[in-house]
Length: 116
Length: 114
Image 1 (cartoon, each protein chain N blue to C red):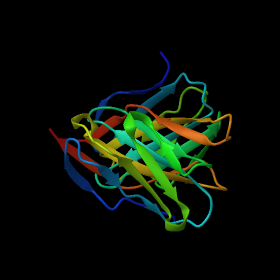
Image 2 (image 1 turned 135 degrees about the vertical axis):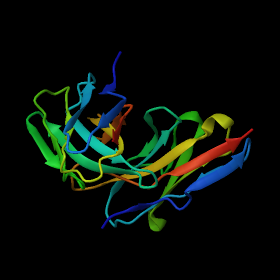
Image 3 (image 1 turned 180 degrees about the vertical axis):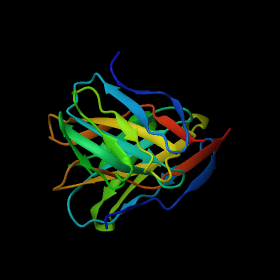
C-alpha cells in the first residue's frame, strides 16, 4: 500500500520538551516537505528537502529542526524554542510529472500537536 | 511578497446549487496552480492542477477551474454541489524559478446542506 504516513496522529508536549514527528513515504519521491496548518491561515512551509542529506529552511523554520538520512524518511523535531507549537503538522512529498517536468505535492494525514 | 487570496472564508450552499470559489495570486511571472481539498478527518487531497495549455482544467468529482492570466485568478467551480462536497478548499501556487514551494491561500470552508 503506497503513500505517506505520519505518526503519531495526536501528540501532547509539555512546556520545554522537544518532540519528534515522523513522516515516511514509500512512493520513491525525492523531495519532501513539512507544513504547519493553523486555523484561518492555510499552510506554511517549515522545511523542505529535495534530496537525501540536504534540506532547506522554509518560511517559518525557527524552533524546528529536520534530518534527511534516508530517502523515505523526513522527521521533524519541534524544539522548546518554538514559542507557539500547537498546530496541525502536515508532511508532503512530490514527484515530477514526466510530460511537463513540473512537481505535484501529495500530503500525509497529519499530526496534531498540543502543548500542555 | 507573493501571496494567494481566497476571498470567501465560509460558504454555505444547498445541494444542487452551483459553486464558485475565488482564488487570486500576486505574482507577475509563470505559476503552477493547484486546488486541494480537505474533507473532515481526511488527508489533504489534490483536486486539480494547472501547469500550461488549456486554461480550463477539469479535476476529480466534477470540479473544474479556470486560469485567467490577466486577472491572476484560478477560480474553482462545480455546477451542482452535493452534501459530500462539504470540506475545506485550498488554492495554492508554485512560482517559477525557485524551489517547489507551495504558497497556500487561507482556505474556504464549504458547508452543503441537504
